[in-house]
Length: 516
Image 1 (cartoon, helix red, strand yellow):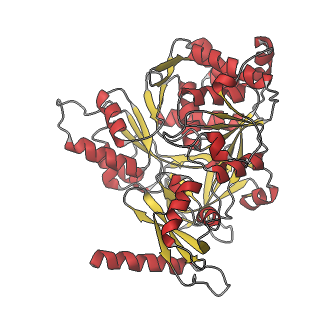
Image 2 (image 1 turned 90 degrees about the horizontal axis):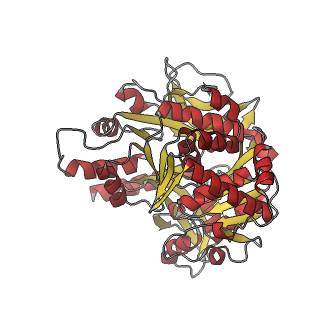
């Protein structure tokens, strides 16, 4: 590790060191706004003083709510400079979802930014579900707070202080808040950047929302750590991505398989201007349980390297493929454990299984979360003797490559977002037309996976109103693509909803549709 990394320990110290070493490097570029490291530090310092002037103390939870843009970047670093803990809110959140997390974390202030075009203002979305102040970056007036006191606050942040509480989908129906500290985030995404070879001069569009762990840590944070240029993407569209690709101005690209397939379909249809490479991409990163080999092969015609990786909110970065790995390793595994992380595969009794056999993936090391906010009991269920029980089922080959083969939890992944069926069910039960509901994930060409909701309607209920209600009350990636009405939900011998039976129904319906 380079000498300066060893002295950082915290995000505020990292920002100061980078700004002093490379003040003129542009690290944020978006819609006419260009911020150098020196300018970013100056803007962050002013906003942090504004938070302090509003009474924010070290350890307070501060939410940031908006689309990816420069204001989000400044607000995030300002929260850290003020010694506070960031609570990212998805721009897709509706009032129920946002208020639930704000109350749970006892958030002090919400910093709001740009919203989805046509959406209601954040205050209107939140309604009366939370009574704290909503402010914009422009509202953060430094007032009486001096630069000296703000600098003292920033440098007093310790490596073991919390820096993030990330909302994660759970199988219990209520999202949990994952606590992560400065030291583990700084180290984890320095190591991630090493494998990715992120460096000064790279131009990296951040498509994953900053409210998502990947967008925040492997995007907003990693680019500043490496003095690369982030291009925040407020709303992803294939056309926008193609314009960036064709401009030759992006060198790093990260996303889920559906995004890469759409990109490849566009690239393959367009004539090459010369015999040279069709893009300026150096590295493509595809974080997914499995990546089809044909996708890897096709992407390598447009990028120098393709990387597959595995991580989870509770365990930060777990494993990554490395430079020189053959296509079959990248396609069929998520690579080896990153430095400082141990991985093992165990059976239901906790015994390690032989290489190549299936079992639950366990992780130990610096990247394991500090716990779930306010839920020590749930923390103790998943972190046992230092080992994080991921809930993912996988295998490990003789070289240590980890492959994800199933999810022990019921989560499914829609457009790269983890979706908890239990959480969606809990929200849908608030719909006035729904008496009972069970949600499963099913294959979907556009999203990879999508929700299918089996519902029992209330007397007089209308199935046609369920999806419109869901669109008004939950994030779009959680909204089921289809609703199927049943007279009663199937149950197993223990009286629990029989999800395997519902998957069987979905499979039968899919086969009948194909044959018909």
